[in-house]
Image (cartoon, rainbow, N blue to C red):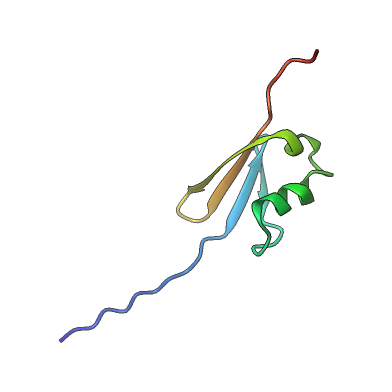
Length: 72
């Protein structure tokens, strides 16, 4: 009788904002914690919408898109 061994591994996360690829600062942080960490460097992330994760085959990609709206 043949046996099959399954190997599992987790894909690293990556974040994309305004065409810029941002590596995962800490895999143990939640998405909201990553957003809070990146907000000082990328202020528009605070109000951006997030989509994902998208499996790219080599990573799980989360994309932040600017919130589009008109000012008063």
